[in-house]
Image (cartoon, rainbow, N blue to C red; front, side, top):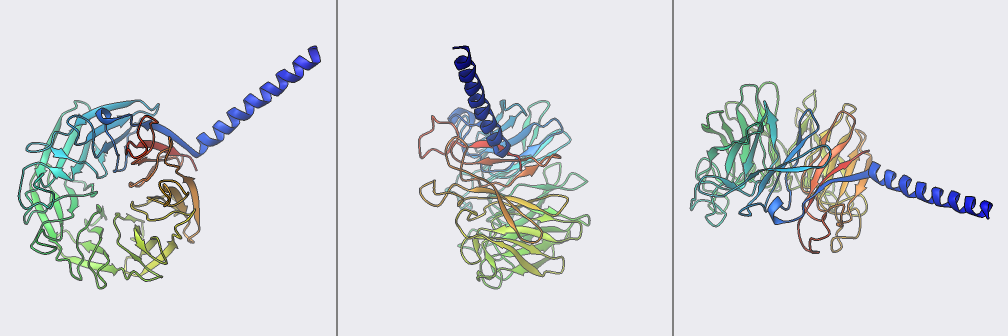
Length: 410
């Protein structure tokens, strides 16, 4: 009897240990730090995250909150969420914050896709043309630094986010506005906003060989030159990689061709190495389902990886983050598995400098999240943090875009 009891106890302990080990192994792959439970706390985080020195994460949801047009949130390292700001919409606040944030001096800076002053020049049913905002983390004070009017100043800084120079000036792009092209709404701009809210348009796209409709943010070099992508235009009409100097001169470094050996429709921004080489993704092109590319400082482009659309991922919507060894990390919006009504729920991937891809995680669209639109940030230990627009809380319906904040440990 004692031997039988001991054997049963040993079996139970081994079984329990196996469960713990399995759970630990899963936690080493992906951990949901926070699952958005419903409308009041925000839904559908489309933008990326920024992390402070204590490990707190800051981000936005595109919808939800009160009155339902987006939120600004903080997630502690322990997964506790604090709702920092409910966007109110026009006329004095923004709506639909979809871009990445930057954190500097205890202040968060970002953009809203719409809201602000109502204008008939916006391609958004007169919902306002978007804003640049500032949020002070210590006091909780939020203010709009600039409201786009939808004319020559630009309109709809969609998924753009901002970059900041050493003097505190903010730089970004608007997807529309700036001129009369692109169905009359303008083909987008590169802009500068000073700390006191003065806006200067550095460049207005025409939608031709110079590019048009920039949906992503910018990266800045030590000389103040700005680099980004446009989703249309160029020599073949499917997007460009461009440079804009501090004085507003634009140069196309690469025009995508949508060929089996090249990408198309770069919706994401770039990352730059110490030698001036630029790295990014295209949503389409290649043999099928998007690419990871490199553009040298002299404008020579090389495709590092072509997504096949299966277990390796498909349609990368976001940009990349780079480690000290030159490895690139990012997300794909679809692919990886057979969930999310067939196309797959997205992946987290690594690309080596030699172009070898490793899928670090495949989303299922369940409690782990799915359909990540934003890129990743990386801490000093190599852990990756990001957002997924759907999945998460089981109380969300099958079609609800609730979303999660996640951590992946390679």
